[in-house]
Length: 416
Image 1 (cartoon, rainbow, N blue to C red):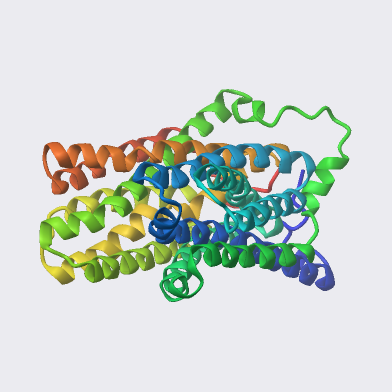
Image 2 (cartoon, rainbow, N blue to C red):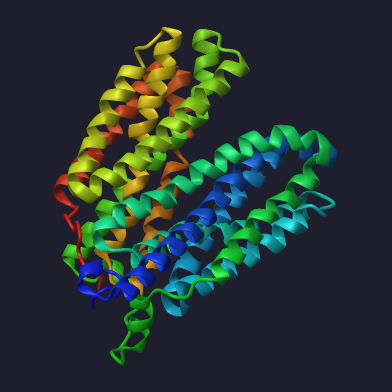
């Protein structure tokens, strides 16, 4: 079935073209704000863990479990809400996830001990989990084929914007409002996202798909509907697993690596992190621009080769400014691939399974990626951090093979 917003403005009346462009813009903004909420919330939690632990008397294990169970909730919520959005609608289910997140984040501010706070964080994580995949599906369905990778990359940039906003806001406000106040502030972006979504309807392609009288297959089964689709699903799982593994492996351990190897202070390590995040953001943006012009597979391969070379090169650097610039270049390739998943996955699966595919395949990758810091830490303990970082480069060879042999090119394809 053709995507109603996929036609070029020249093929439809100007008024309808403008209406489609306006809808696409609103859909992308709503999706980007939602994904920014993910990054904003998780980084705030990292900043306030010490204050929570002190006030509630938590052990380090209990404090760490708040992050772990938020991510567990996000994985489960992503899978469940992705499936629900294919069944009941993108915007409707996104609003459900926002309401769930807002209510239970607000309750975190009222927590009296470890167990009720853990429950609130886990349920809030369920709400967070749906944002990535449903937002990517909504953005892809709203825009024209020749803009799909760019628009999807803008949604990916939401995470980086949320992380930077939290990094700037939390150190200023935490001493004033405390950790309870920070949870209350965390509700505000959810309210903004909910208001934005109030003004957009469902994508026309989704509405049309719901009118079909044909039997509706289970969305999960459609991810392995035939041999070709199963190969593509396996390929996407490998891509998202490698990207998340590399991202968490680098971002969790690099500040420690810089401190131990080169004597970096906390301020210098924070400066490296900020520059690396900016490099990642540029990489995500550039991926979308190039993928719309050249194709999905060539740009994935370009970034994967770039990741191998930049990670290897980074493990050999010692000069201060080389480490700073090298971090930005490495970040561009290691996390820039996030800019391509939204368009790629949207073009591989039909409307009735698109959000399910986005959330299931990406969250499998997120779960695998969670072992990245563990693997880097184990290698660093036995050998050295530089050896561990260098070994990270090898995982992108698997990425290259998956792209060459499992991922089809679907640039500009009309959505089914």
